[in-house]
Length: 258
Image (cartoon, rainbow, N blue to C red; front, side):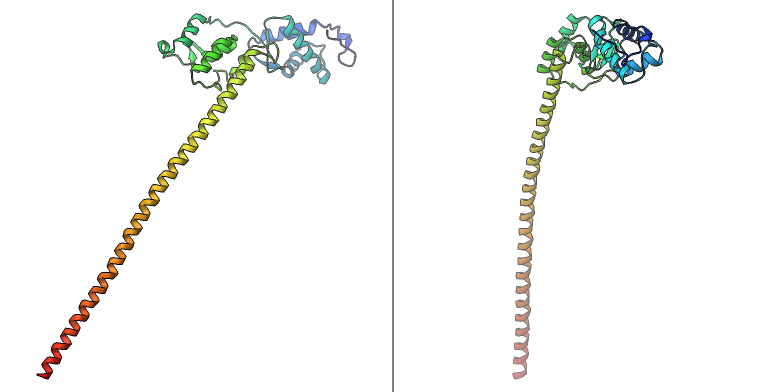
């Protein structure tokens, strides 16, 4: 039960512990399916003059926080996400056939035109993953995570993540916990995959570098051999010219003697 003291709320406004949760319900009913933090709810209750008896200070925000928790317990339509964000869940006009959704999960080859992270049929705001999480279908979420390579960071047309649409009455939601575990597992898998790809790339580069080194060394050997052969031919060429010179001198000397 909420106990309002003079320090928290001005009693002249005649507020009871049931009226503020009703004010929260009324405000959320004006904005169905929209998410608001307790701070935003407090501000709107005050500035939209829905609850004139509410104070625009820290004490007033505490009252709204307590009222939101009580409203969550009292009214089935109110949902909570992230422990501090509330919304009034009004079912969409789009009715989801979960028999078909189960078929899609169990027989994806027959529904190749539908992706888990893309729009589902004529509903352009939600993906299959969002629909599954929004309806707390933990069984389908687990099955998808085991058999398909999907992106758990996908967002819908409203920019909401899968965690944003998971309904919960407290932070111990089994679906939310499972989703977080699957997301962390996926991130670890991606990290390991990246590490393996990096190691493979490094191995390939090292192999190519070794092969290139062998080619360069072989070419250097060929160059050194050509240099050696060139010096050898130069030496023989000098000997040839020297022999011709000596032969010419001898011919000249013989001619002089005769």
